[in-house]
Image 1: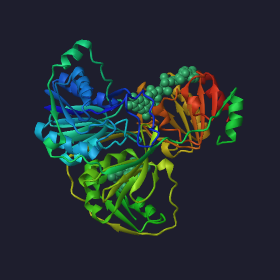
Image 2: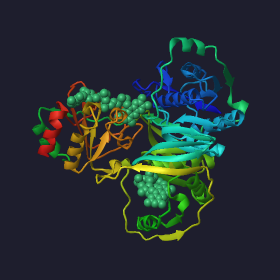
Image 3: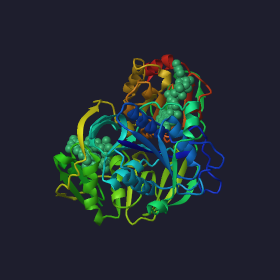
Image 4: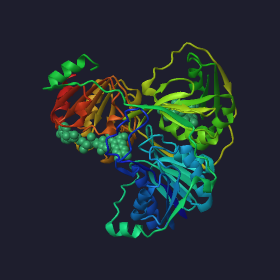
Length: 251
Length: 277
Ligand SMILES: Cc1cc2nc3c(=O)[nH]c(=O)nc-3n(C[C@H](O)[C@H](O)[C@H](O)COP(=O)(O)OP(=O)(O)OC[C@H]3O[C@@H](n4cnc5c(N)ncnc54)[C@H](O)[C@@H]3O)c2cc1C
Ligand SMILES: Cc1cc2nc3c(=O)[nH]c(=O)nc-3n(C[C@H](O)[C@H](O)[C@H](O)COP(=O)(O)OP(=O)(O)OC[C@H]3O[C@@H](n4cnc5c(N)ncnc54)[C@H](O)[C@@H]3O)c2cc1C
């Protein structure tokens, strides 16, 4: 089977986020961008399935600005076989909503017929946690979100999911959509030779028009503001002082 | 406002929901099909009922976050998750970038599908008496089946609604030593939380993770022990009323959000604190 892995280019998780002074959004000009950390976990899982002989081909796909090519090359350097870039925005500040992303992915799923789609559970920029579930809805496939472990066996997959209260294990019919949680695996780093090799792997360039999908946003961003700051606290010198001070609060 | 209670056993929850003020009707779909919180059948049921409603909402728990985006896509609308405040019927506020920015968004969709972050809202009062009506189960998409739940039984309060949370990080060092965090929590009648590093290292179970990609808590008191204060962790606890931090490194960023900070070895300070509270 083929495994499709959607990867999103997002602000690097180590970068301090700055809200633009005019309230129009977060400043993404000249900041370090990386693959969404949950998507690295997804690529890793797909490659492991291939290494275990359970998948024949791993395809990475990214939807966004042209520079998402770099993110796809990272996926190829990790071990994916080929890539699809859907250029849907000119400006990095234009975020394509999960519903539109899911529609594009559904069209790609129809063409490629993967046995499994592995997405991240959430993108660390918009923190929506929605694309995988939306893709599952549009394809009519089963969904297994927040995967802590994944086992593919014939035409089904068994997934332990990280849920409130612990773990829930479910069995889904393939094809299915799985979304990754933090504990699924530890993604590998791409080696230098693999980074070189990745440059020669095929990367298809597409546009939303190729799939007949309208990516116009449904949500209008009215404004983006700094969160409320916490007032500075005090340092105490001992456990006794800590107890005394905290008693004024809740202890 | 109609409340939907879905489950293999949902009657008791429905009767309780009927007492919430402002609820006009409670629908109960009791069927074995809904016994294990699988997304596909529950989403199908909600979609079959969606016609009559302008807003379809649930709290931002792992179950609702699994189900509602599927519902939204089936209705061809965007989903709004983790909403922290309501501006008007179309406009909502939600945190983005691990809470480093607050976004106000206006939905152009006819129907709104929303999950609310419960820690930022007060519970509705009770005293109502809405009608409770049984409804039939919807179709079964038969795409997934339940295998097992691994849920730890605990007498501690639930993490996201606890008044006090005591959390441990990588600094705690091992699963065995996490007991000192739990002892302080039990003395305070608190829930136990953890950083991602503590969960990844196997000191604490996954559902204790507080943060951007774990649980969001806003208790009256949050005690962070051996947690450095990465933005991803702060995203899950910085709305707590009082934050206490114990860390041996005086430069740890957690002290920038703490109301009371103590530079100390947690292996001495936490047991001492447990003694004294
Ligand atoms: C579809 C479904 C079926 C369930 N069936 C059973 C059952 O047969 N027996 C049982 O003991 N427990 C059942 N549960 C679990 C039970 O409801 C949990 O005790 C409860 O979900 C825990 O609440 P929570 O606050 O942790 O939030 P979550 O379970 O994470 O709830 C998230 C949100 O989903 C919605 N939701 C959750 N449970 C229900 C429900 N039962 N009916 C309607 N909406 C719900 C609510 O909006 C809820 O706040 C079911 C849960 C769901 C979602
Ligand atoms: C995609 C993504 C999502 C993430 N989501 C989350 C999330 O939801 N929640 C989360 O918490 N993190 C999350 N993280 C991880 C986050 O970036 C940090 O790595 C993590 O929070 C660090 O945990 P920590 O503070 O326990 O460990 P560290 O940063 O290693 O800090 C340990 C602290 O313990 C102190 N210490 C050590 N020994 C002692 C002692 N004896 N006494 C007192 N203090 C001591 C040290 O001084 C240090 O400050 C995420 C990261 C990524 C990339």
